[in-house]
Image (cartoon, rainbow, N blue to C red; front, side):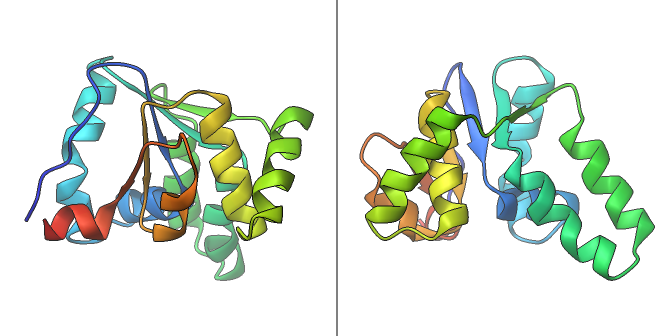
Length: 146
């Protein structure tokens, strides 16, 4: 198994899948991402994600009436170490440009949010993000395999 290379400082963007892996403790991602959570608690990096992650992570627990899982996602997304990026008009504009290049709408919003905050690392498990210029993407499955 490879290891996660973190920036020495700055913000690390996590998309909804990364949050799901963390909260639901999905192997092998949970142990692979442990250094990120440790660095965030120590104040070395800030974890950021779009407000869209709120919608994407709460949908299943709400549909399944799983209050315990819903509470876990809410706790993660409101933790001191996590900052939600609001979808402002400039971010929507950038997302539209990325959408016009073939990204799905949610992916375009995540990418635009990561670019807007100048993230030092963008964590995902979707290789579609690799084609976004200027976005410092790490695809978890590829990093684990290396």
